[in-house]
Amino acid sequence: MKRLVMLMLLAALALSLPVAASTFIHMDQKALVRDSASVIQGRVISTSSYWNQTGQVIVTDALIQVEDTVLGNAPTVVIVRTFGGTVGGYTIEADGFPTFQTSERLLLFLEPENDGASRVAGYQQGQYRIVRDKSGVEIAVPVFAGASLVLRPDGSRAATAKALPLETLKASIRDEARRAGRPLEN
Image (cartoon, rainbow, N blue to C red):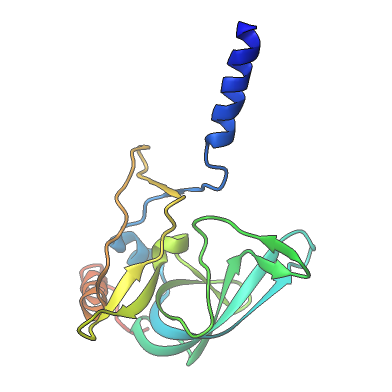
């Protein structure tokens, strides 16, 4: 009887653990600037999800209208690709991966893909939503999902980025690029 009760308790404990969690290596702003070909501010024009070439994974492309190129160069519209999406009733979701909604405004750290599209550097660590506070100031809010765990290379937990006024974040990115010897435009 004790064995049955213990097994039931262990099963209940296992079921209570979070199923949807991802773990990522922490990337501070310095690392994001180093690894990004460009940093843009823009608005999502549209999204489209489809099966990859092998038919095993759903990916989503977001068309982003560029409002400001903070670092590097970018065309007026950027295609940003991410893992996950919905196609024909099938949905793939992964905590910590970038997500996009039509009309939302974003600041994105971007790395190039082989086919001309881009991906967000550092997964959601390189994605900020732009909102206005009560006084009308634009604020860059980190998107990083709460179910995801961010670890430093030594395995300890890392703090995630905090919301900042958009212009403060953009100035900080440009300052970091200058310290790294990167030109603001390529």
